[in-house]
Length: 79
Image 1 (cartoon, rainbow, N blue to C red):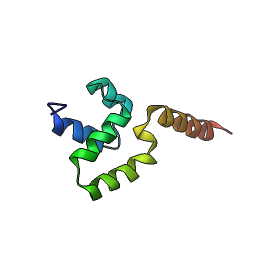
Image 2 (cartoon, rainbow, N blue to C red):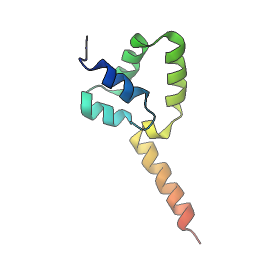
Image 3 (cartoon, rainbow, N blue to C red):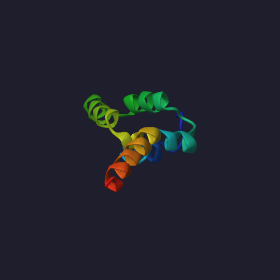
């Protein structure tokens, strides 16, 4: 296999709170690598559900998550 810890890798990719950047730091795989590997390891319907879920999720992308968090904090602190 490409990655000896496929269960860990799959659980990191499946978890909404684990960003693609974090996966890259731990495994060296880019977002496109993760998508490619998940496509090969999941059933078609499971892959489609996962892909649809993570596509719009800001927590899977560290930059988007931070920008959204800052925006929310600014709205909360505004008088």
